[in-house]
Length: 402
Ligand SMILES: O=P(O)(O)OC[C@H]1O[C@H](O[C@H]2O[C@H](CO)[C@@H](O)[C@H](O)[C@H]2O)[C@H](O)[C@@H](O)[C@@H]1O
Image (tube, rainbow, N blue to C red; front, side, top):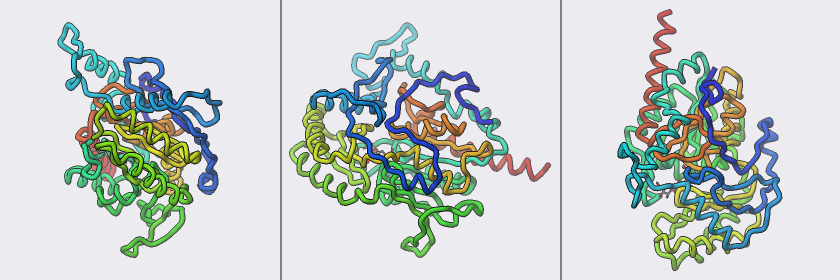
C-alpha cells in the first residue's frame, strides 16, 4: 500500500480546485467537454498566514456578482500568493526567540504536515514495493528553476540525464502549462510522454513502455516514429491566436509585460512588470477576457493565463495517460506526481482521492496545497528522482538474487 495522509496521519490543507473530474472511459473522457462559466478569483480563504494560490470556484456553484475591480484585485492576490517571497528576502521580517523568522517557523510547521519526500523516501518506497510506479513531472519550477525570462528556463544537463534515467525504469510523462513543442525543446528526450497546454495537448511514443500498447489517435512525428496524441481543445486554436494578438495590442505600453502563446492557452507574464503597474496590466487582460466568454483565467507564479473553458486540466491528463498506457488505476500501480504550481493541484487531488498515489509539491515556503509530500526545489527533485533509480536497481538486484 502506498502511504497517504490517512496512513501517515499527516494532515492536508484542503485546497479547492476549479473542476470536477469524473472517472470515465478513455473515449468518454475524449468526448466530454462541458463548458466552464467565466469565473473570478476570490481572495485567499482561511489561514491568512498561509500562502494560498487556490482561488477559483467550481463551475456548478452559482456565482455572486463581483465588480470588475474586485475581480482584478482577487486575481492579483491569488497570483502573489502563488509566488510568495522567501523569508530571507522579506523586508521587515519578524523573528522569534530562536532567531527564526515567522515565515521560516511556518515552513517548519508546514513540512511537518507535508513531509519531505527525501526524508520519507525509504518509507515511501517500502509502501510501494511490488507496484508499477508511474511518474508525472511538471516542468517550470520542478525540473527547471524559476527564472526572469520564460524563454531561458533551461533544465540542467544533470537534470536531463536524471529524467532520462528515470524514464528508462518507469513510465514517465511531463505535464506542463507550456506549449508541448516548447517543453520538448527544453527537455529533448524522445522517450517520454508530453502533455503541453496544461494537459490539453498530449503526445507520446505509440510503442509505449515495457511492451504496453498505448491507446489514442495515431500519427507520425517528423522523424517518422509512430506516435499517439490527444488534443481535447483543438477547436480553440484560432481563438487562442486571436487572444494573443489582442493581449499584445493591449499590453504594448506596459513595460515588462510578456505574452507567451502556449498553443491552447496563453500566458501574460508579470515578472518583469513593476508591481505598481500590475493592476493596469490585469485590467487590460480582463478587457480581453470579457470578449471571450468561452475562456477562463487562472493564476500562477507571476503569470495570468487564459485557457479554454473545457473540463480538462492536469488531473484529467493524468487519468488519460494512465488509461492510455494501459495501467489504469489498480492497486498495483503507484502514480507519483511532482509539481510546484496551482495547476498541479488538480493532479494532486486526482492522485490523493482516487488512486492512493504520491502527490509532491515543490516549494520552499508554506503554501496551501492538496499535496501530501514536499520537496524544496528542483535540486531536491533531482535527488528524489536519483533515489528512485537507485531503489529500482537495488530491488532488481535483490529479485535476481532471490
Ligand atoms: O506547468 P508548468 O510547466 O509549471 O508551467 C507553468 C508556467 O511556467 C512558465 O512560467 C513560470 O516560469 C517562468 C520561467 O521560470 C517564469 O519566468 C514565470 O514567472 C513563471 O510563471 C511558463 O512561462 C508559463 O507559460 C507556464 O504556464
